[in-house]
Amino acid sequence: MALNQSKTQAAFHRAQELMPYGVSSNFRYWDEVQTPVIARGEGAYVWDMDGNRFIDYRLAFGPVILGHADKRVTARVVEALANGNLFAHTHPLELKVAERMIRMCPGVEKVRYANSGTEATMHALRVARAHTNREKVIKFEGNYHGFHDYLLFSTASTPAGSLGSRRSPLSAQNTSGIPAAMRDLVINVVYNNFEGLERTVKAKWGEVAAIIVEPVAGNFASVMPEKGWLELIRKLCDEHGIVMIIDEVKTGFRIAKGGATPEIRSALRPWRKASNRGSRDNSPRT
Image 1 (cartoon, one colour):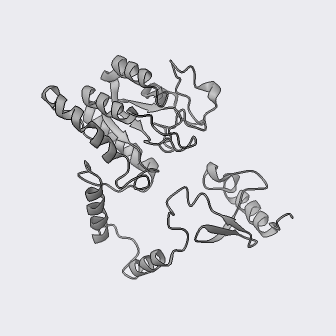
Image 2 (tube, rainbow, N blue to C red):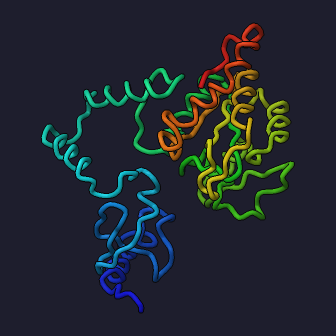
Image 3 (cartoon, rainbow, N blue to C red):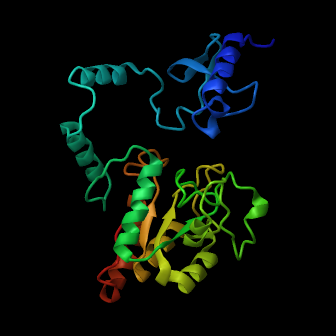
């Protein structure tokens, strides 16, 4: 039996007149018929404009882990709003959250908040370039680090035919509008390719400010890192004065307390103890 979606379709056609493709992000566009307009949500379910109920497997791409309209969350939000909306000053809740994050994440010494994952990775890359006085970044095919020009290359949305060979990958931009000069600053390596990463770092480490990685490659079916993969990245960064940026926009606090970073540090403890005598004084830390 076909669903009645007349109100949903009318709302979507209205959205198309107001926004490109009728959505605020291309990832939300399915097609001319199936792109939903969601009116409300509760728990694990959402309802469209016609009252059709669906299981929400997306959950806002992950953050709504307690489900929609959780009464405990709603009550705390209302309580907070009673004390004001948004301030252009430091707030006690910022301190409380920062203290919790530092306590849960070994190696994290200070916290800086960002409005989005895109903004966070953009600023992390800028800090890495300032720290190392180098400009290039190594990223991995299929990893997604936001929608800014510096890193929107060779993601899971890039056609496979434009990626080049496994031994010599190309940096393929995801969209028009990215300056051609940006491609010269991005070095792509195949995810979980140990030999390729070591070879690339050995040849180009003097130009590389950062290696950025998703601990779990989320956008192409959640590919797990092979044993020793993240540890190798950490080791190479320490040896060559490169900043390791662990993009945990998706994995942070979901795969473990403190995300993937504590596991990497724990695995590297014996190696670091043995190598400290010959380590660089300026080696960046996670």
